[in-house]
Amino acid sequence: MKYIIILGDGMAGEPLECIGGKTTLEQALTPEMDRLAKMSEIGLVSMVPEGMAPGSDTANLSVLGYNPEVYYTGRSPLEALSIGVGMEEDDVSFRCNLVTLTEDASLPYEDQRIVDHSSDEINTRDAGVLLEVLKEEVLKPGFELYRGTSYRHLLLWKNGHEMELTPPHDILTNQIREYLPGDPMLLAMMKESYRVLKEHPVNLKRKAQGLRPANSAWFWGAGKRPKLPDFQEKTGKRGVMISAVDLLKGIAAGSGMKIVHVEGADGGLHTNYEGKAQAAVRALLDEGYDFAYIHVEAPDEMGHQGSVEKKVRAIEFLDQRLIRIVREAMDASGEPYRLLILPDHPTPIAARTHTADPVPYLLYDRKRPENGAESYCERTAVQSGRWEKNGYHLIEHLFEY
Image 1 (spheres, rainbow, N blue to C red):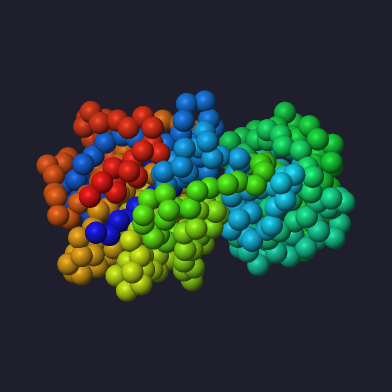
Image 2 (spheres, rainbow, N blue to C red):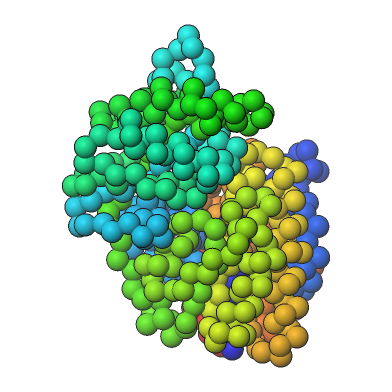
């Protein structure tokens, strides 16, 4: 038996008047998921424990069977594992976003507003140039800066202090004053980053091209080195992780799963969906792995952007350019398999950030088809009457047969 999880990050949402009271998942044309829904178990699952922030970090730990209340130490330490940053016991790491703030010359840094948490999904090449400037002109002693992917990078504070900091995607359009770090060194570095980045040639060129400038560092997601049990020892399954984002690759690295790099997979709307699908099939059918986790960031990013059209398109791309390819290849192989499709959390268009609400899941077993629902969406999941409160148990259900 082979096992597959296909996760559309932030794919769930809330009804919108502009599309007739449907969610973006309902609005999207998803013939593949709807076909599977008719033969699958449909239900709701809560991936974020009560009282914890609804992040992709806590939620994806749950999806993989790790109780966040036990194993979560912060987002950035998981990303550090992916980047290969060695952390000592007393080190603290932070996510460092390259964000877009307003550039109102009449206002101090504290009164600027946050426009975009991703600087128009800045490419890694441009981001790397700006990070070198930050290393040379902004970093204070005791801090180290490491390049990740796109706008997502890592700040390491040797013998540092943990603290609660605000994710930039939670405060889009807000004035930043009340969300800035209380630590004077972190605040000074953020303010200095704005001074040196806003007129940098990379950003001047971006503005001339109609792109948003990456004009400030934003630190958040602090935590210390995590300790995750080995996935194969825990489940008996050899697994691979296929994702563009460092968070998921970090969870894989920390749990002993193989990380598969897919050319052109960048976490954006136009990521390499087909390449991810083919990599999963290859791992399962040619390389002898038992389990593949395919993570697609695009629906979440489009939710943060507040774009109904783009989020719908991301879900449709996931359905036709990834799920269909995986299903067809697995069916053609004759290999028995179980397939779980779900988001980690909702990213509603109106909120433009994550919520902790339960998400719909679809569990298909090629050998044991069920009488399912007419489609896969939030509505049919609610109608099913199934709800798994402790989401970290759902993977045990996947591995039952």
